[in-house]
Image 1 (cartoon, helix red, strand yellow):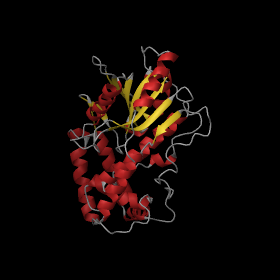
Image 2 (cartoon, rainbow, N blue to C red):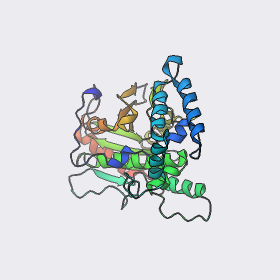
Image 3 (cartoon, rainbow, N blue to C red):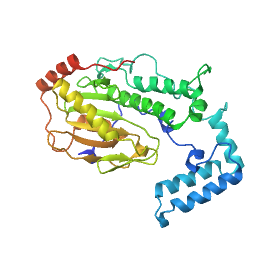
Image 4 (cartoon, rainbow, N blue to C red):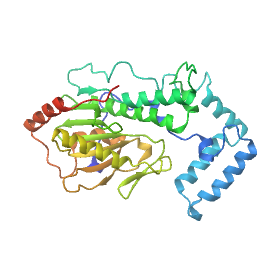
Length: 328
């Protein structure tokens, strides 16, 4: 069962850089003010939001806590000055200067022949999208010394930061998958035939065939009426619907059936796994914290029949011959 999985990271852990998600809202965004707001404007915004978000008047406990945390970070002149130094650049900033830098090569390193067979470029399309948005936001002709410098990333709009956060999320998933072992095969950034949709990862192993969506919106989310929602997730977004459609395109094109579709989120975004039951021929969809991923891929799901070696080998050949990757 998902809830009883013991996860062991054999050769690598989630990099520390992911603790500081680029997608997370700044205190100024939480309070709804400009970074140049006066102390009085900050205080008025804080007091108004406290009243609006307090659980006793029907507000959200999560938002109420976020407002309090934002005030702690920028509410006093000393704390605000310290935060702004970290945000806009400081030689003593806690985040490494290469925290968001693109990894070298075109995929996770696989020094041992016993590691997972890896194909494709995890996070490649999301990084290209991030760089395109950076150029659009900065303005044509603007020289950008380092688009991955933490201070620069923090100053970018939410949409831009989310693209980088998604790229990092895909890369961390790939790093975890890379250590599953030789019995697993992984494909990343898979083309679904749509100009807008792709499948982040496909993982094949003894426990079955899994599609994976790697995401990070920088804040907690929850599953409601079959869709993910959250304070940092735009209301018009339908990530589950879009993900399921992308997986269905792959299933039809290659004539394969997914054991389950997995949504992987940072641990801070989700307390416990949640799921949507299997419907007809549609696979089960589960949403899990990142620390549960390795166990689910190795052990499978409760009541699920594990495939034979011959079936896994046949599926691997079908996928290897049929999968196409997005252009990066």
